[in-house]
Length: 387
Image (cartoon, rainbow, N blue to C red; front, side, top):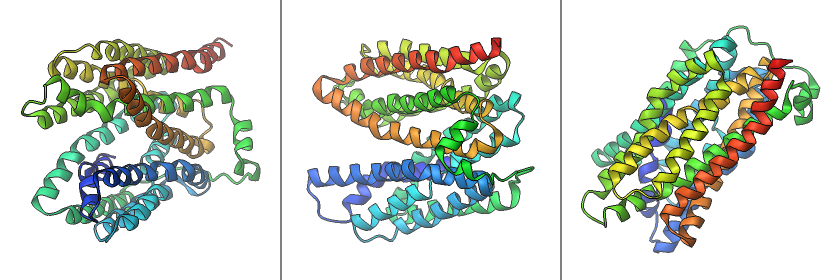
């Protein structure tokens, strides 16, 4: 998971710069093509993930991990050989088709781990992928500087190929029972098999809004820091540090909060995460220097560790083992929908008002998410426990 997170994030810092080398584009054309190339992978993956989830329940989660790692290795390496933006766009679409390594790895861990220890296991997995995602942009930038953009794609493909062989020889799936019931081929059949479908769909909506909230902030962080520093020297370095702080705290806190959730209740950790994020997003709108923003962003990372890994834990604890792949793939689709709409929300708010209002609107989004979670997940789980 660590190396997968690193490989997937290595190409992100220079993808737009790479597009600029593929043609003589105007400023508006470059922004347009960059936006399409970034987002098309999420759109395709949101559509294809449910199919791969169904196949995972029928054929095994390890097979889906191998499919994702090998497919991504070939596709990302091929990006280093493209001659125009259209070829790159097609490969990004294929990257969306072959996506699903992280969700299927989580599904495999969820089914291989006793449910009472699911929080700890999935928290550790979240820590691994977060650490790789943090290191990836640094590695990608360093490799691009030492070699070239194209060579970095080839190196990233090689990393993902090593993941494929590591999973092939060292990851084992014990006791897998394939789903053969034809009625489970349809979503309606899956929903019928769930003990608490309201809880599951409440968690899927929670995932979508968590991702939308996080991604409404991420695109404007650098611009907000530039404004706080009045365009002074070192903006890029400071922005990089501040952007990395939530990931650092998430990496440290996720396993600890996962174990705590296993003891006191995962849904209680989620409520804590919502409240912590609201308490940090609101004052973020009124900071006067990058240090204040950095402290709040570090704390927000603890909130992140209280949210997404805990949603996956609750999905694990409330989903039959035979449907874990399907439900985790639905969760990935909802996550990608949040990835798509989050930057649109942040950009629209910043365009109509200012950067400070993005933080306030995001706090409102988190509050709405908390209310929906309480009514659709928290209360049903408490009532089920009492019964």
